[in-house]
Length: 254
Image (cartoon, rainbow, N blue to C red; front, side, top):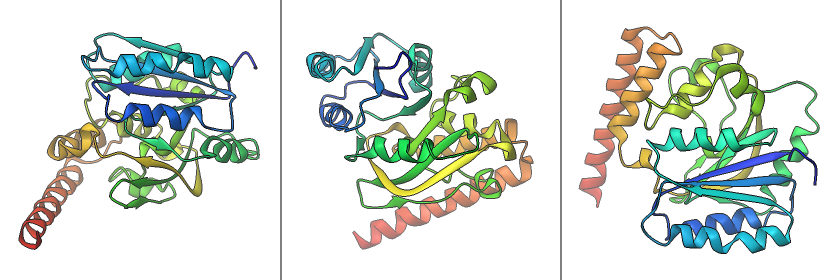
């Protein structure tokens, strides 16, 4: 194996015993093996750590670097940053503890990355949510500066991006991935794979704190993307109106 793996995959977990086994299996069963897998657990009190530990021998048999820590953290972005500091790969992804890579996903990313002639900050793919919805969109700054238009779990970040723009801002609790990518503004260099690589679970924190997502997104747009307060606030109230309308429609049609 090369000294520096091509990929680093980081999974953050806390009391994820119901889903993490399938997540780890999806990583272990990739045909591409030039990667390292780092799990950052937030001191789970269920069987999560036991499940993580039980995979050590299987990764060792495949000669894939597998490391994990279990300790208290101050939030998901604090845990992400711990993973980045441990990473050696050139391309870094963040796979949730209820997300699943499809078979051959890493091959798909690598096949594109080795063919790209220009330097890019991140590569992203199509992502399917458990309810069947599919995120499929190429990056456009005029849209992205108004809202998060891509699924973070489908991204691999160039490690050089973190060196240039810094780690995740740990004052954010939900929208830190959006804030991170806003830092490069219109100069963000991206590459989109119009293929499905990941199934995203619905247990993530952002799926259960919608108002907080919108508030943090608004903050990021004002402070990092230099959006005007008027536009950012207008977007916020429009989002909330749409969200409440969807809730009402669901309640009446249930």
